[in-house]
Amino acid sequence: MKIVPLNYETYLGVIENSVGTNLFRAVFATVDGVKKDITEDGNLACAFFVSSILKMFDHIESIHSTVSGTVRDLEKSGWQKIQEPKIGAVLVWEEKEDQNKEKHAHIGFYVEESMAVSNSSEGRTPQKHHSTYGELGATTFRKITGIFWKEGIEKAQTKV
Image 1 (cartoon, one colour):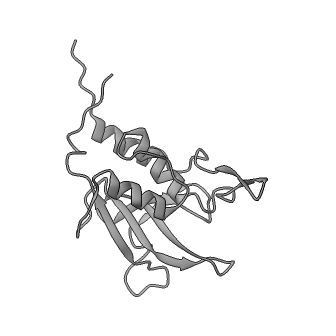
Image 2 (cartoon, rainbow, N blue to C red; image 1 turned 120 degrees about the vertical axis):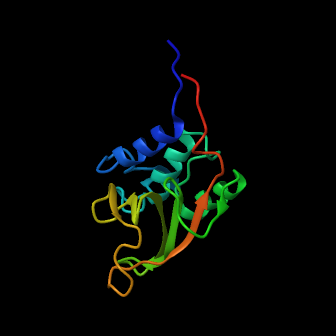
């Protein structure tokens, strides 16, 4: 029997199956000598979610807790900006003010026609949603500022 792993399909399956999981809810660090969950119990966990999955499939070098760190690693690891999203691409959304008046960019995965999976600050878990959080002109619209794709990920294979 010959088994050939389908890395791209597994990558997409892991993204889709992450919806609702609490796995990406906490990243601990010391801040001024005090232990703290820097994702605020999943509120700021989008980069941790995306970079963890990308690292799991060796698509980037490290796991990150910030969007900017994840984007730098994407670029360093050969991901290129493209104009139109492809299934499995990484999406970066514009900065938006949170309830504390702090601005945060957002990151997630494009999973199907006009749909994405990213960590929800409300649910504090990965959720599936429209790729712009709503139609253009709607109050929930959020502009995509970057679409990243790595040539060959859809053909990549891993060892079993």
